[in-house]
Amino acid sequence: MYEIFELLLQRFGVSAYKVSKETGVTQSTLSDWKRGRSTPKSDNMKKIADYFGVSVDYLMTGREDADKDRYYLNDETASIAQEIFENKELRMLFDVSRDADPEDLKALHNMALALKRKERGNYDDGC
Image 1 (spheres, rainbow, N blue to C red):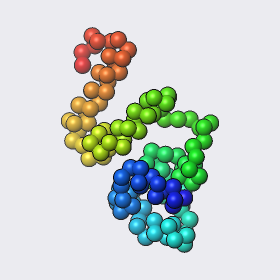
Image 2: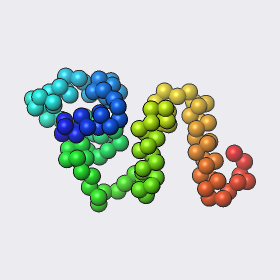
Image 3: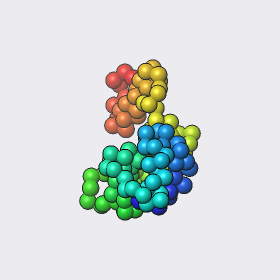
Image 4: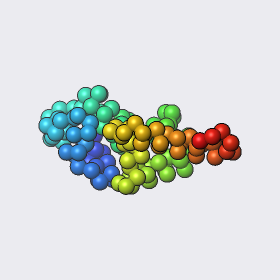
């Protein structure tokens, strides 16, 4: 599992320290996993998987289960979302709800709704 964790650290350009701080999984826990002293508890695995946007299965095996429900409905959307997530300047779109001002979050919400209406061809409902 730790090898896959290290690959994810590299892919996303983050340190284990940052993951530790943002997930609440202690650095000593990560160190114990790395040295094989302990195995991850399921709640910590879920925190790390969620942080990177992967499944616990992927974190454990390096493979996604193709039969599981996916968050994104098509591969192109998933690919674009992954590009946004990996772009440090755009990643805030995923993190916006963590510490955003309510006004900023509402503005982002309104923009997303407007884009969805545009996609559906509903231009006249006032936003």
